[in-house]
Image 1 (cartoon, rainbow, N blue to C red):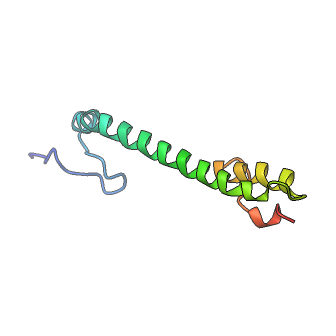
Image 2 (cartoon, helix red, strand yellow; image 1 turned 180 degrees about the vertical axis):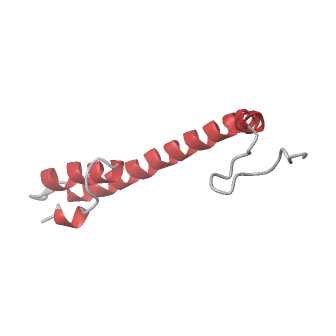
Length: 87
């Protein structure tokens, strides 16, 4: 019985033929890397804009408390409940 080599797995969405899947991934690797770099750059820019926005608290009593946790929450290393940090 002849099997269709372009058949996709219903669970993973990958090609059932491992050689075809490897060729598919190798063919798209440069574009995937370019997209990842672009997303990283955009997220870094957005994080910098948010951090600059937080400088409006400069000179207020809670500046030292508000800015560092806010930047950590955007980087994913701190729980994202910013309102609990600003008293």
